[in-house]
Image (cartoon, rainbow, N blue to C red):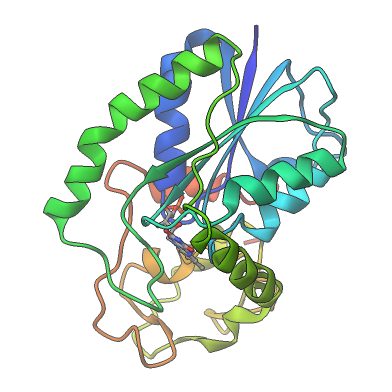
Amino acid sequence: MKTILYWFSGTGNSLAVAKALAQRLGAEAQLLPMTATMARPEAPTAPAIGLVFPVYAFGPPPVVLEFLRKLPAGRDTYLFAVNTNGGMPGRTGAILRRACAKRGLTLAAGWSVKMPGNAISLYGAPPVQEQQRYFDILPRQVDAIAATVSARQRGPFQDSAAPLSWLLGAIWHLGSPHFARSDKNYFATEACIHCGLCRKICPVANIELEAGRPVWLHHCAACQACIQYCPVEAIQYGKKTIGRKRYRHPQVLADELCTQQAGPRPA
Ligand SMILES: Cc1cc2nc3c(=O)[nH]c(=O)nc-3n(C[C@H](O)[C@H](O)[C@H](O)COP(=O)(O)O)c2cc1C
């Protein structure tokens, strides 16, 4: 029975997990980027659908909830979620479960996978050895997820433990409406080489180029792809990110992330 894995990813962690899961599920699995699919009149559907995405401020990114609102799924769909995070999933599973219930859908599981953190406004990339530790345990985690999905079983909801998760959920409720305008602190320095990668890699087409340099349009998904993938580190977020180590999943190409943007854009 076919499974579609819809993914959203800023720096490749969630895409790497989605790809590993697709490999385990075999020929029945199809990978599709959420944001590019959202622009289509109707998203493809399947008997089983998985959502793979990062945690933002202890909950799901708003763009994932927007996708879920439009997802062609029904009561019989086997729906599951896998989030990637830097160690604090917060209330992600519970929030998503409630969003599904509002649509009359049942979320069968909400797995949480720890990966290198990418919130560069708060911290730089973790040391390579630490990153490798997360990558080393990933195959076992994905094996377990794939076994549950293949058997169409209900799985765990791996949120942070209560009562901490309640507090974290409140932070998400307060913080997530502000993501769209969180791009107001981005700017490109004189180091910009006008390559336009920032514009191409933005999953929600939130960047235009003016005189070859990026301008942010205030409907940001907060994914950090623009700042993390700038080849010359010309993009900064206020003063905090100057000299801070960038993070990109080592096995994911910028071109793969660029497929998230809907349709071709004029050069
Ligand atoms: C805006 C933002 C908020 C984040 N909030 C959290 C968080 O609340 N808890 C956590 O563990 N990681 C948090 N992270 C880290 C990401 O969830 C983590 O690095 C994820 O694996 C990135 O996936 P991606 O590479 O697919 O974008 C945050 C990252 C960003 C960019």
